[in-house]
Length: 248
Ligand code: HEM
Image 1 (cartoon, helix red, strand yellow):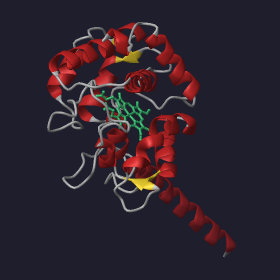
Image 2 (cartoon, helix red, strand yellow):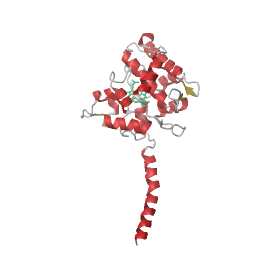
Image 3 (tube, helix red, strand yellow):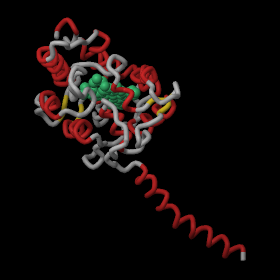
Image 4 (cartoon, rainbow, N blue to C red):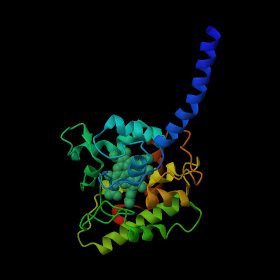
């Protein structure tokens, strides 16, 4: 009798295993947002919501949920997530001061700024949705199969110069410029195929254009945790390539 029970247990756990595996895959399958799902001006937060690493509805996100989602999705360390996300709760409209909706990040001047790589300035009617025309300006720099630090810094600087020339109310503080360099450092690092500094162009395109992790194209979650030190190090290297407010 004992043997029959043991065999039955073994068979049922073997049958359950692929189910658990496929559920895990399914949980993080890419799905486009529905009309009521909330999304941010950040291509990575939107990507992580589209994969279920952040709530798919983009609503009521606490700092703990944000940290856990970035860690599970792209191996960003808590320190780095908090560096970028510290101001997120300041724009909270959830009715709970310790959570925010992704749309709360559209509020200009908290993290959102003018001169984005793929979004229009705040003086336009939409400062948060992917804008193909603006992205084309940025992506025109990405003519090789990889994007190095110099190319990314040039794309960043040229986009700031163009936004300033096009928008009479353009306004970026030096802090905004530094934040925009951190955003560039983040995409370079996450999409760098373990090199840390050179991103794969096709992967970056998927991140911005489809808000999807480019798993089908070969991207893998970085093995090592991405820290503040790494990101700030990349930012300093780009600053030394003349991306400063005084130069735009
Ligand atoms: C690995 C993690 C992350 C990556 C790769 C990433 C990437 C980016 C990039 C590339 C941009 C610039 C978009 C553009 O200029 O068109 C951006 C913007 C933004 N990110 Fe993220 N991000 C990450 C984490 C975060 C976190 C943790 C937050 C905070 C909750 C955040 C909030 C924002 C916001 C509000 C913007 C809009 C800034 C603007 O006006 O352009 N991001 N992000």
